[in-house]
Amino acid sequence: MLAAAFAPLSLVSFPEAETVAAAKNAAPRVGRARIVAAGDLMQHMPQVSAARRSDGRYDYRESFRHVARYFREADLAIVNLETTLSDEGPYSGYPCFRSPSAVADAMRDMNIDLALMANNHCCDRGARGIVSTADILDSRGIARTGVYRDSLDYASNNVAYLERGGIAFAVVNYTYGTNGIPVPRGTIVNLLDTVAMARDLASIDRRRADCVIAAVHWGNEYERRPNAEQRAVAAFLKRHGVDLIIGSHPHVAQPFEMESDGGVTLYSLGNFVSNQRKRYCAGGLVAVIDVTLAPDGELSYSTDIVPVWVMCPDYAILPPEVGDTLRMSADSRRAYERFMSDTRELLGI
Image (cartoon, rainbow, N blue to C red; front, top):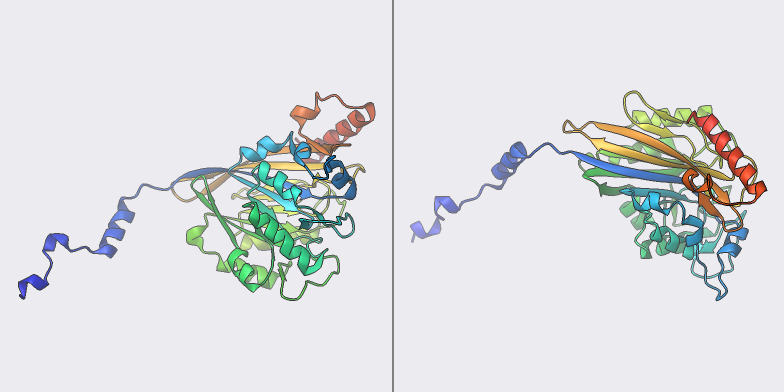
């Protein structure tokens, strides 16, 4: 009976020893992923009207048709959603945005993976707008970060962990403010608070994150150069382990920086789509960033910047390979060429 109480030696397993041996024998991990990021996705009322079809439905696919391929070809596609979403009207534009849920349908159609929600218009429709926007994005399978229904939502989504191409990403999102609208009771908006930001970045599980991305709504509207506060916040984020910074809010493009020790800072991608038509505002940048993870764990980056311009009346977003040859009115051609010239001169591309 005593002998039967013991398993044969060949059947005894030692999980800890097996784990250590597997780790020693594992090949070095490598990865490659393409991030595509766009600026402010806005919805002024002329855009809502342009998307309305004869049967009363809304369809935004025409607006994104010419740039959709960039996002569909990405491993991780990110956009700043600068409006609230609702399944029913009445809809509204500036100063308090409320847009059709069909915006999220178009985002899903072009394979947007992550919506950045922390911006100065996130509280435009109070708690109801925050909840409906989160619900609509969730129902379309679009991840989100920066604004939360409640503390449970915050705990689940404050750091968005996504793995693409063998690289693990962690994304956090902050805004300078909410246009003076109080954050509704019970909801949470990530504000530009260095104490909270440092706490968030320290909480990131580095076993789940090779690359840390911070998306920041900051700066002064219509200024084409980053200001001292933006640079100070960027330096703070870098000191706390951020690799890639994606900026929004100025509604105009600002220069980007490739750090000598790795990492990228995109100070402002400008407007992805909006009804702002004045010089410098009628378009923005789409950033295409290839991230490579080497066997030694080091990350390297290759960045391509694509200027995009918005053509009315359909609010079609035009990259150069389309806009350079697309038939358009003489006025539109002049505006398009001036925007492209201004942007290339600013960025030195």
